[in-house]
View 1: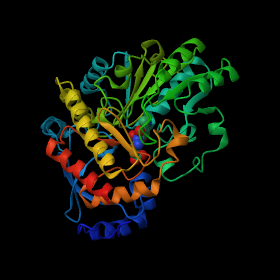
View 2 (view 1 turned 135 degrees about the horizontal axis):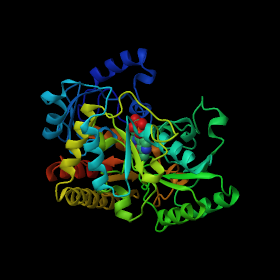
View 3 (view 1 turned 90 degrees about the vertical axis):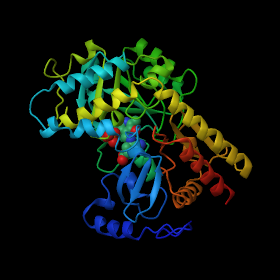
View 4 (view 1 turned 180 degrees about the vertical axis):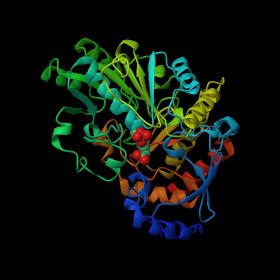
Length: 436
Ligand code: KE4
């Protein structure tokens, strides 16, 4: 593995490391979200000074092509003119309000125009709040307590969902999380992703007790695992039959893999959908929404309580509106698919030329390279991937100025700011690294 203070290509990271030392004195692990600490790849994290378009610029003056994009939100690239203008224009002098604003209705209308299953929506401040609230809605609406999630699925850090979770929990190899009492997860049932029979079994074991099944329609917190043929369709059938709600957690896939999210690609209508990331254009926004009759339970019209001081924040709404308006322009997702295919074909050729077996798994502008012998279809298989080999790959790519997610259990993202020259540079870097 490369020396983490400098790297083969003369990449100096000394200022990053100085800042990291200081940060560790006051922030647990020196970060405000665990996966940023590079535990999944070893060494110290890179401190970013600023970003523009497809590029990140670290505090040591190194420039990287960004394949993390703040874990998904920056699909247009950093500092996109219309988004920056929307969030900083004169009328934005008020940063936060205690009353409703038209912008919240505007962003709601935009989301609903793109995702027809959403008939009513509530904005919150993170994906965690969105999924936590959606599950509370499901319990309130059905009067049932149990929920089903999938191992390796990550839906944020609410107690009831930190059971066999993916993303940072998987990166750190935590079975679950300390501090979550058994009472908080006693109603959380888990099944292996892509095993819909296991879900049917749970409904047989707990007839009339399961409020909802929450699923990432693409499992992208264990790397990137596509839904097997029929998996999501079966979840829809089983939940419909059993009187439970189907919740698509599209915090990552929403507006990422299609304007209408993964539900548009697979033609499945969930009862509730959770959003985050892209709908805030990089500012803190989450949302949950779905069938009007279900959303009627939400206070103040219904008895299910959920609230938030900064929910519907004017700056965040403005950035979200501008972002979705850009994404609604014709051809954006065709272009993201073209870029994704370009990269996929280049990486596959590099693997073939190097005689290396690895699994490139991609949907649209999300992809993951598993150092594994066979395609990865669930969390058990994802955990068998060679994470040490991934770590070497990560640092070798960083040395070539390609910034990948620092964990085998995360997905890479392609932004509209990545042009063919940049994609070609990325493919060349992969080929160089795989040749060793
Ligand atoms: P946030 O609370 O982090 O905004 O969203 C939680 C969440 C919910 N659902 C899905 C499908 C998600 O992917 C996430 C968060 N994604 C991770 C990246 N895999 C966030 C990165 C981090 O934790 O720092």
